Amino acid sequence: MYQRYDDIFSRITEAPHWFDEYAVPRYCEFTPSKLANIYAGEAALAEVTCQVCKHAFRVAFSRANWSSGTIAEAIRSRTLDFGDPPNYCCGNADMSSEPRRVIEYWRRHDPRYTRQEGKNVIVTDFAAFTRWVRDSSLEVDIRPDWVAPL
Ligand SMILES: [Zn+2]
Image: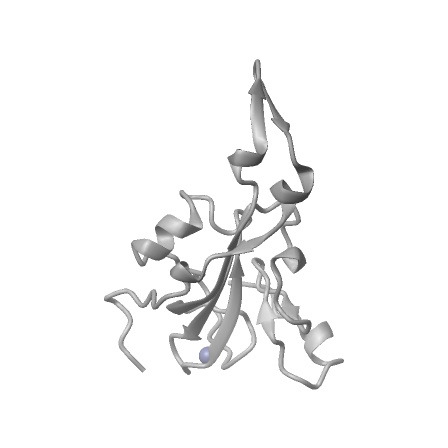
């Protein structure tokens, strides 16, 4: 179960626009540079629903909350899963969230912009290496079989 951020919710009347990898509410527009994990090389913003009340959330993924393989593989195999929903809707934050769809998918750290030097990886083009690139081919439905259509 995630923390309930009442100290934040109580001071901001508008609904959060998205939740980060730790289910912390965010009020800015999503961009991968706003992830909790500032070192991420891969990111996704996905829509999930509360298993109980069906409230829809936009939640972020990075290596901070998805470490079993890549996010891209998890999208293709429909196994990407946020776990418990953000602690914001109906008070059943110990239930599961239901994966629905990927809204945005981003990656960076392309090895084309590096070279191997002995045991070290040298970045040859820092600007290109650190630039986030969106891949809309991974912005797809990820609803697994255990989740009923809305
Ligand atoms: Zn709910």
